[in-house]
Length: 358
Image (cartoon, rainbow, N blue to C red; front, side, top):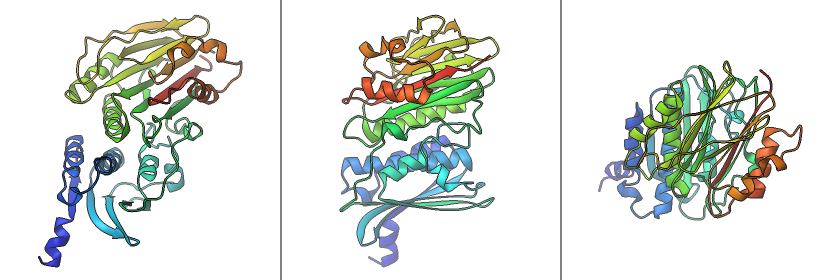
């Protein structure tokens, strides 16, 4: 076989122009002939990277190209995934590599997650011209990367999110033995205030993480709508998937109200002038969902909204107010809840929003 033809058989290119084209690229990546000998876990990992890079392209550049190669990197048999776009470029690469840093008003999970999955990663970016990211995963002798720690989780970038009235804490960790979590968070500006939420995809590992990222993207696309409408959009767009529990809370800054709607095992409690616990309806987003049930309660300065996935022990979460200490930062509170009540046999997440002043 000519060398050029053989090289072509070990490379695939995908044009990323819409969420549909991204879904197609992720699905086709796992079926590439030159990856047939990879383990199922490695195939899922590579598909996860394609999903993360493609999501970044759509979010920051609109369109771009992803290429997947079977190659040799530093003498190692490897899969290379590269992404190229002609967007505005990355302002600060060092900050972009930190968990939950974002310039789009969302929680940035892409580049840090890729860095944990792949053996190495290089970023070339020029302001106003675009970005090229090249990642390699060694298939023989991959060095062990550090797992995500509770201490790694930090609140979103405050330069874009309107957090003047809130103190936010977020802690997420995967089930023991996995590198990425099927839990993911939502934190975004909303015309009426702040949209906050948790997504807990059924199952664990890379497949769950890919779907969590896709569902997060769908929520953010419709983030200006009502929370019930957003849940229905996610359900319809991801129908037939393995599904997820999702809880969305809207902190209405004008009316001083907390609105909540949830499906599945997402828990929400309000600690403060009154004790309140929301109700998530039975169901699985993407599989079966009844009409959204919207609940509303008054919120006051000093009140604390606590949202947890079912990876947090219910028996401990019933006593959250007893765990809180006056003046405690939201991040310290969420870290403590995850550390003391997180189940090792499940993905776990905790999102705290403390209301500072009217």
